[in-house]
Structure formats: C-alpha cells, structure tokens
Amino acid sequence: MPYILSVGLFAYLIIVLTFAATKLREVKCEGLQVVVDDSGENVFIDEEDVLKVIKRGYGDIKDKHIAAIDKDSIEQVLERNSVIKSAQVYYSLDGYFHVEITQRKPVLRVMSGEGYYVDEDGKVMPLSGKYTSRVVVATGNISRKFACNGLYPFVMALREDEFWDALIEQIVVVKGDELILIPKVGNFKIILGTLEGIDKKMENLRLFLREGIALKGWNVYKEINLKFENQVVCVKK
Image: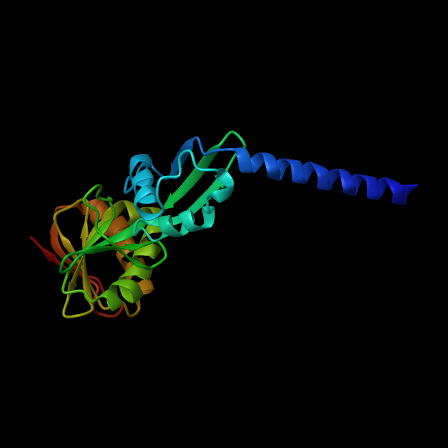
C-alpha cells in the first residue's frame, strides 16, 4: 500500500510539473521590478540605471515569453557593471522578473591621477559622476598596489574602531609609503610614518588624544609625530 501511494504521488507530481511548465511557456514578461540594496547609503545606481543596463546589454524582455528569457545572462550583464557587486534575477508567475542589486561599497577614495575608490573587498572601483561616497580620502603619489595592500587594511581597521572612524578624515601619503593623518576636528596633522608597528602607534595616539589634547584643547598643537618608537613628539602652534 505505501508503495502504491508513493508511485501515485510521484505520478501526480510529474503531471503537475508538466502542466506548470506548459503554462509557463505561455506566460509573457510583464516587466521588471528592481530593488537596489543599500540605496540609502550609496546611490551609485538606481532602478532606471539598472533597466538601461539590461536593455543595452541583453535587450528588451517585455512581452517575451518567460521561458525564452535567460536570467543567468541578465545577471552576468549586470555584474559586469563597475558599481554592481552582485545581481539576483528571478521571475514570478504573474509575469514579472525581479532584479535584486547589491552595490559595491567604497571604503577609501584615492585622489591620485584620475582618482578611484577601493571597495570593502579591497578592489579598485572607478569614481562615479552620479554620486560621491563620503569615505576617507587619500592624497599624494599613491600606487594602486599600496592603495589595495597598504591603505585598504589600515582603513578597514579604522572603520572597525568607533573612535578612529569618527575622527580620521584624510590620509596624506608622502615619500612613497609614509602617512600623515588629517582629523575632522582640530587644526593639526598627525605624522605616522610607515605602517610598520601601526597598532602600537595608534594606541599611543589614542592615549595622547584622550589624556593630552582632551585636557589642553584641540587647537594647542599643529603637529603630532609618532614616527619615533614609543614616543609622541608634539609641536605647538
């Protein structure tokens, strides 16, 4: 008896799936419904842009039979766009294709040459004429290798710390790989030197800012120098 029920259920499923597949071939695309993730934080691309990318790269899909539309190809077209991290495309039986876009997230803006961003995955992405992301800015003669392998992990560490994330606005690169930090408050610069021993330097700086500048005021010094081991050397205005 259980065997007969199983065979019957299997046959029923085959009939239902065959019927559904037949009906699906008759359904035409009614349009596209687009959702862009993180659109409140970054606005590199919007629904209108996505529709244009699909039409230009894949073609117009409206009124085509759903079964004839290759959603994987649409995803590939979208993911070739420089500001899109990932794209998910699927359809519903009402005839609509649903497109879910995840944008790339910059963490650093490099103002060297034509300029570019480094995203949260440590990859270079171009600047956008549509939107400017408010992230740490790096200036100076900066190679892409140093931007991705040196500045990127340093900036990610800053972002993970509430204190530094709120304080540091700009990084100036001098002499190839030495850093100067420009804070958002106070009229002074922080000379870090190279990234060697950076964790210790940043801890020394944290202590000085909290116990020194916090008591004396943010406009007493014009320069704070951490290039020397276990020392914080300051120059008053």
